[in-house]
Amino acid sequence: MKTINFCILTIVIVLCLPDTGYAESPYRISREKDGYIFGAGITSAAGGYILYRSVSPPAPADIEKLSRSSISRFDRSAADHYSRRIDNSSDILAGTIALFPFALLADKTVRDDWLTISIMYVEVWSFIGAASFLSKGGIERYRPYVYNPGAPLDKKIIADAKMSFLSNHTMTVFAFAVFTSTVYNDYYPNSELRPYIWAGSLIAAGITGYLRYQSGMHFPTDIIAGAAVGSLIGYAIPWLHRDGKESISVTPNFYGGNYSFCISLKF
Image 1 (spheres, rainbow, N blue to C red):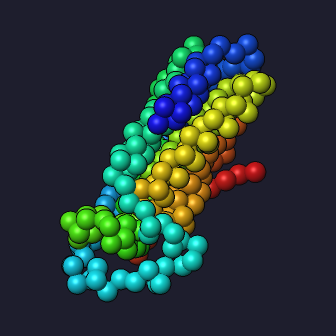
Image 2: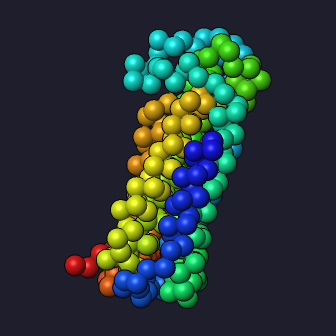
């Protein structure tokens, strides 16, 4: 953990260093577009939460029927692990990485855009919540430790034991690692620090994913899926707000009793 803490401290210090390159606001917000983006995230999260709460805990008899042989070879080794200490360490690391974007506010130009950055930050969280609730509530998958005879039974007979897919921790850290790096990149496209910020933030996110595997909380496929979805969210939100993307419109549709959003792009 000392090595991990040192890496995190180094990344934060680098983010706080002044930069002499180009730095003016590359983003634009609008009440209409951001209202629909945030609304889509919150609406999806609310619907996913209903699914999430509907997942019932497994019975001890269900646990006894599980077989490691039913796990794919690629994922099977995850069932050998269980550690509350590593699980707690991944919680701390994930929470720290989620705060990375705030280090950007050390720069005056970014700080002057605090409202724009804050809105984008909240929108990232809304889609993280939506993806997490929808996947965990809609795709019931036992966590690796449930197959491990060394894990306590009381941890196996709770609803959370059936919420392995996808890794919410991994999705969160990759979302904010990519978000932080993308925002810095957009403010300082000529900065020599960009490769280090990208590398450092993604390494920290990757360590979190590895800890989720070592703790027995997730299979490799859960982690890969979480990293992919998180990276997409972390990049998409800044992209949608870049200056010059005014041709993007988000409009609600209600037809036949179904509510949806339509995203239009003009090239």
